[in-house]
Image (cartoon, one colour):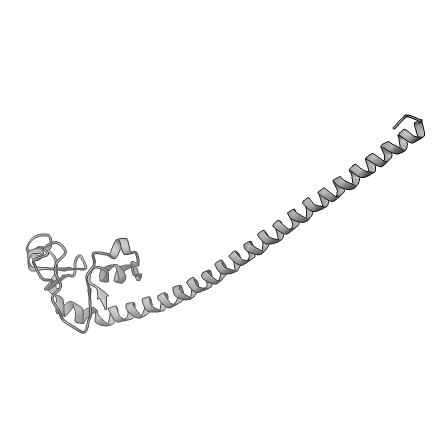
Length: 162
């Protein structure tokens, strides 16, 4: 399968535009099966030609308008001419796709590990804060009792009435 509008981009840049925003209106066709593909400029017309100058598929109306001075070939001839190149580019894209999928899986695993680490850190922090608060309460209780005891000792030593 190939997109007739990306072929020139793939050929000139050796990369596939993979953004849904960019490619959502593109027409995909199977290189092995010839079927009618409608023209983007003239939806009632069928792609029958390939403009070599613009590296774009065109209909009969396009050949008389925007592409009248250009080198235009039969679409089927262009498909045969570029078929092996398209197949090689598609293999490269599939290889890149596999690499990207592997990278995505690795990133997802990393994300999962990070979330688990964050949860453990949060749990340990909550436990530590609770422990510190408990120690603070206990320390406050002991210091209050000690202060009360020392106050009583001072009262007894000074002879003040209780």
